[in-house]
Image (cartoon, rainbow, N blue to C red):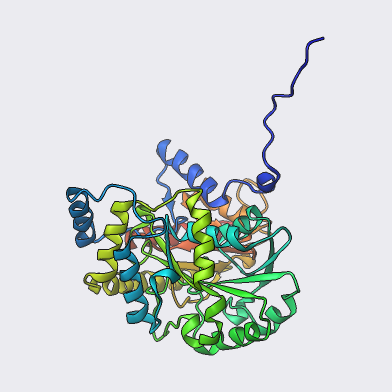
Length: 407
């Protein structure tokens, strides 16, 4: 009797409920339409349109010519850790030893390492919703349970301390907080952050993961404060996440970093040692220059993003049926399309959700944006204004026309 085996692929349970990112799907559709000759404007990716500064690229070339192309220390070179420590002293008045700093292949890997190193099956992680969509999936892959807590628009899409208090259970392990935020651009000033930190002080089993990667992209009179600088007593259970991708337009270089208690950093190194090992040696050399070299380019680009923010916010608020809060930071707007829900396209299709509205914008008006539902709060849509001003103006005009012809 011949033995038979089922050759059907069976994915691991840990990824069975996780799909391909909706943002990537929208990007793929937009790319297909562009290949077909459509003049699609893509406002979906969280990537600056600026190039990496010249001094940073030159530092990479110097590193290559000097032969810095071998393995490095597992979680960051001594030079890069020193540069990161100086950045924390300069920008945040925080002192971290090299053993309290880790470097990964992007901030995303640093977050993944932390979750894999700390979560047991069923541990809960509180997410301030809307949240960056990868947060929930990374928690799930690590065996944790994402616990979204809705942040109301009237509260600036910021987490309310009382809502946080109610969400904490004996299984809560982390609060993940992103300020300034992807997707909303909202940020926590000292007045908004202190009540959140006070809740954490009362719940000593809950750790804080403070994602501060958009720190240098704040606008108007908003003053950024790192969470640990406001609550030093939480330092022993806080991981501060940052990186060079956004402020220095280095998304492809894949360098992110974190700072926290050395026991956590050591546990994260165990995870990284069995995945990527060290980050790219040349990228680390470039990141040293980004953090220690001239910083004027960061300010120049911040001002450019602020102009784009105002262009987009003012344009969206002029569209009947759309409202848009003016964000404090990052390079995203998070706009309500509630006033358009229930209306019909010329072909009779009902706009019954933010996802339907975004699909309509892409398929019929050549603008790619991301529905708020993928970030945990509908009916909104996210625009990344990290694009040329001419493209932003054209996109706003198209969105206005798209809304105007709905019946």
